[in-house]
Length: 128
Image 1 (spheres, rainbow, N blue to C red):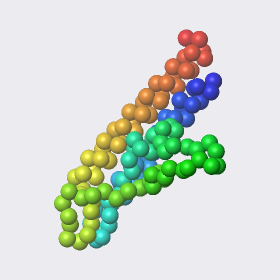
Image 2 (tube, rainbow, N blue to C red):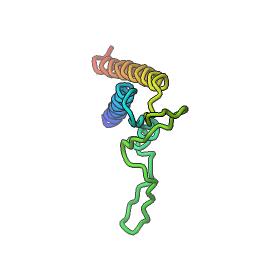
Image 3 (cartoon, rainbow, N blue to C red):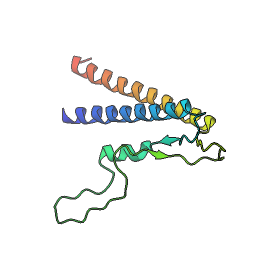
Image 4 (tube, one colour):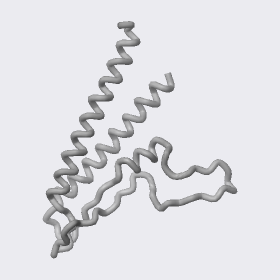
């Protein structure tokens, strides 16, 4: 039963990360004309590794040396623009729209995959 819970929890966290990334990208798009606005993003794969426990090395004893990569959970970083803007805004609308569309598609795919897993579990419980 814990294996099922762990799998569903993993996909739930993946959906939360995708949703957070969509909000960040939508904010970038909304501020495309705001002077000095800096485009932000999160690395989905890095954040997912942290959630999955494949992120930074964890210590098991207080005398162990802590390795700090400088990355924290849900770290938002600034995107480097391909072309600099005169008003200091780093949002490139085409890039943000493409990233938003891709992330939205991946969000929907994860939801569909999760629904399929839940339906299989329900079928197994019903004995179908």
